[in-house]
Length: 357
Ligand code: PHE
Image 1 (cartoon, rainbow, N blue to C red):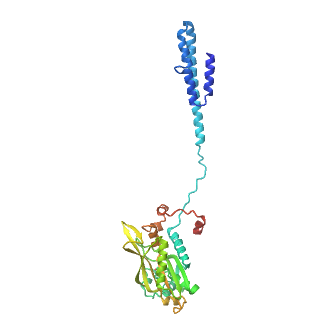
Image 2 (cartoon, rainbow, N blue to C red):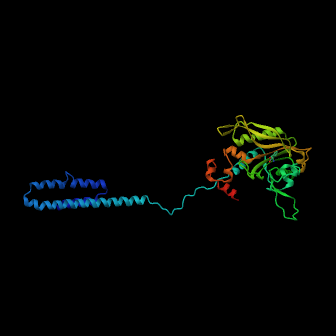
């Protein structure tokens, strides 16, 4: 009996896992286990023998049983410890950085259109947003009584009494950069001028600040046909279309003669806009041949040189290209909103650095 006891207690203590332990239990206490066999032998014993062996056997049985239970819970504790160790989570680790911020649709479109015009030989010209009214109006052949100057369109800069500097405005278009480019570099010229412009205008589709890109090409024999080719080429590249069709509508601007507003062929299907096909037209820019008065104001001889100019709304073409239905994306610049339209987080550190400057 003490041999049995020693054997099983040792096996229990050595059982490496629950399965091994169950094996020991069956061998000892199972129906055909060694203890059960011994119990059966009790029947063949004399009464005295039985009186001594019975309780001893029962004692052994419960001792083994208790040892099994103890070993089982020890094994479970060890398993739990091991699991806790592998599943350990260091909450003090710094989080993985997620790229934040996103390039603004307007910035992206400015980069896109600058690249396309650069391929056609256009450099970028700039001018101030607070502009003298001479550059913004007079030099562009806009007479003092022209409606564009009137208070409801133009933001005039305040002047203190006695301030005799020339009157200034927030530029109402990028066209004054035409004059600045002419004065700065003379003919020939091929420039675009993207930037902010301001008008006192505020409704669902207008905001007091918006963006235009001006185009100006001056040479000995620049023609309207070249204007048309340039704009078609631009639209094909910018809107990523094989075919675009532009419609030139006779119009009037004081600084071009003749003048044309340009529409792009499109269709509206269930509120879904498609460019390049359909029976609708969407205005995207104003254009024309540079007026001789304007060339002269820029210091260029209109008998020697001629050119075309155009002015295009950047917000408008950005919305068209990216299917942005309203101006929220531009002014709230909500990241979730921008991501919805595919504007990814900045992942080019160099670009991000450049933009934050
Ligand atoms: N400056 C004009 C506007 O803001 C656009 C334009 C530019 C038209 C150049 C003709 C030539 O509406």
